[in-house]
Image (cartoon, rainbow, N blue to C red; front, top):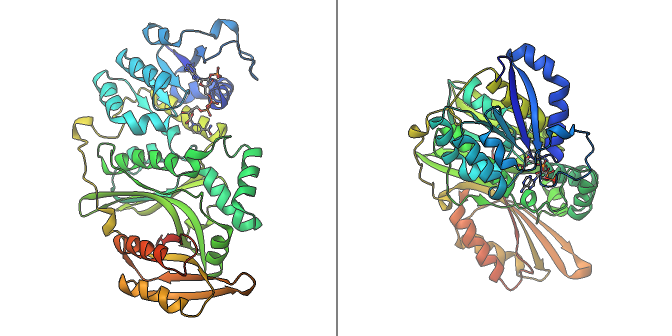
Length: 431
Ligand SMILES: NC(=O)c1ccc[n+]([C@@H]2O[C@H](COP(=O)([O-])OP(=O)(O)OC[C@H]3O[C@@H](n4cnc5c(N)ncnc54)[C@H](OP(=O)(O)O)[C@@H]3O)[C@@H](O)[C@H]2O)c1
């Protein structure tokens, strides 16, 4: 390696890889002034190197066999931008670290699944494993927890970790449009992928939450089954009822320590209109870190897309250029112990329910009896009859109760002869 030049290989040249390269080329002088090292992209690889690309790359930079990069003496950093927890990305990152190459990645699926093993490998070989871009795009939450907030004992971390679902929910509310209409628009605008299932069903947020929990609480990445519910069943009707009651519906990812146990969950929540998080609309992400002595600290910004993601990738790259070799999860892997799971059935919350029923006499008392049987008390009840269809909607806000009792309540309601379909159940979160 020349004294001032650091050679980089980018593997994966899609949405993110190509934009990252463009921004890096544009900013390399500024980066060299700030870090004292000049980043030089020596090689680029992708699945099909003959594919027509929007950016012109000198032929000498393309390399077909990306696996050979890890053995090249003159490559210092490998930037993995392929994606996915297995296959090419996994092989590349494991073998790069084994061969003492620094790694930068935006791959949340890989880090959420293999982050512990990869971190141990990086520590053993004294190289960096950087993954700021894998959580909340341009929001520098990973480095904030590891560095800026290092003095704090974090008790809870939560927020909006998926821009696509936040865009959908806020557009439904603002434009009075159905889920399907807004999803179509999001695809056209490039805010949702052609197959957005991992965004919509909450699994993308859950992978990010595993990474954040591990960082915030200095624990191994949990292998627990996270309570994960997406937004596929959120109806415009519920958004409008929620609005009339002073709430917004947001897909929140929440991780906290309760009695030395970890509770992680991703699900739609009703949150008060006046709360800070309720104001995070569109594709924005926001993360709230609740700790001592800082109290609540909020970071917000664009959570995805080539620009914000490249900003995070360059920040990781600069950290390596500066020579900061750090523990990938802030503390040594040997100190990051497993943490047991809090029994989610004991989780306490109040809730919103919309129950579609036949409009007949005796319905209300039959329904409220099921609440009483499960010891769930009702705070607010609105009945909206639809005389034409001989149906009615019953909207209920409950007092706080255990998850277990809500589960039993729902099974009781589904069995009731007046209830027409599975009721909508959304937890109310105090944020
Ligand atoms: N898109 C976002 O907004 C965003 C935000 C944050 C993080 N990320 C993460 O960034 C990473 C890249 O995402 P992306 O949106 O850029 O994906 P993408 O557009 O699908 O690009 C993937 C790239 O990987 C290459 N590739 C696929 N399989 C390969 C293989 N077997 N060997 C070598 N190269 C292979 C593809 O090659 P070809 O070009 O030849 O097909 C393509 O260049 C993912 O981990 C993603 O989760 C993305």
